[in-house]
Image (cartoon, rainbow, N blue to C red; front, side, top):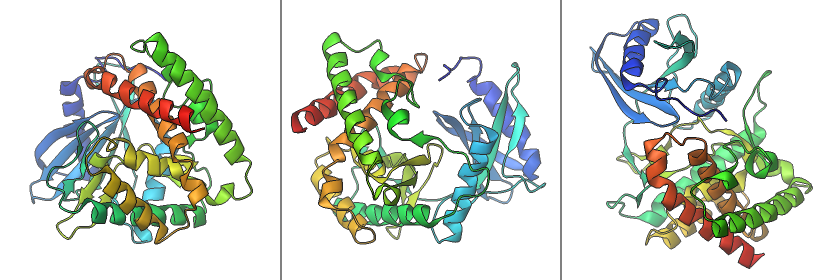
Length: 342
């Protein structure tokens, strides 16, 4: 995985690219404001008619054009099936996204646009659930229902020709070159922490190899969202849960989505209620056996590995540096729990 440079992520250059890209949608904007900078730069665009949009400027090399097109195709299929996911706004020429040269470099950026979705975030990865969440179990029951319906759609959906997305499988999670990087090489790890993580990695490999060969694997491995973190879940005034940001979507185990939804709230006082609601909501729409649920520690550990890999491959990221000690604590806690339970 390629490390980012400060030049590529220059806020001023990205701002200018955001403004100049609007001509492809024939939009006259009165506001173009950066609201998030992580894998992508995300802008809120308000046009002269007061319509709001979300624009993504993708990091160069994060996904191929085919992979981005595939992400948008799945999102469109989900909307056709009644899911409240962001609505893609095609360019005037009918394209799902454009490629524009990046000022001051030889690289280019993919840019896409969505209709804005209103709502309040369920929480954040850093601080857990929002303090004003009145009924955690009910909210997570709704989330579990949404997740189960999404998995059922993915199992039943025939992917288009040329469809390309990453794979959160054994190789992608705990292979020699995981999707998000060799987490065990993170410089901030102590010798003891690295030893625990390596032992847990080997255990996860054994577990996933066993699951891959099971007779019913095809029913529990499909396209997944892979980023059910609190900030990607918006709660509407009516209490509906809306799912954002399919940038990490790919082929993976359904339990990986469940682990992701629980990972950053595991220290929250409402964790038990959230977990119970999530599982009950999931089971109301899709089978989830006790034996499958017993594998949750495997996927919680694997999820922790990915976040360590993320910060390892982004040493220049200020956000990554600030959150690294917290991520190490969580990952080692899950690794230690897995080793004790298996």
